[in-house]
Amino acid sequence: MSTLPVYRWRLAPDGYATYRQLRALGLRPGGQGVAAQVERPRRRRGPLIAYLYCIDAAKPVRPMTPAKWAALAKANAAQRVCPNCRRDAGYRIPRSRGMCGLCVHHEEQRAA
Image (cartoon, rainbow, N blue to C red):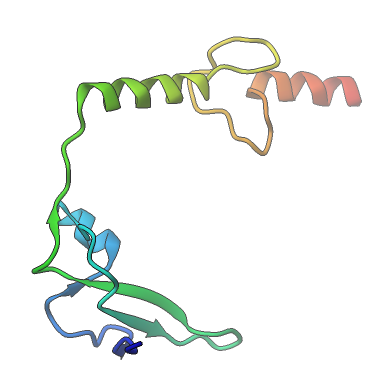
């Protein structure tokens, strides 16, 4: 078992990137393991850790297929329908509330 190289925040050498940085470049890790990690110190808790991947070994992001686009649209549409009034709210309904803003307002009015 080998240990990962650990770098301090903003001091990682060139050639490494986090997952989000790879995505911004249109890349994905592509099956490679974590190559190194960056630690950002915090005052009262343990350090924040970000995993780094080699940019040279990264692969291009796979393009979305029509079937994936359709599945994503269907999932987003399902999250827009209020389970209480069955109307399309026009936005994704927060799970914390579980219903659209109008239903929340009506519930608050009933409770008062």
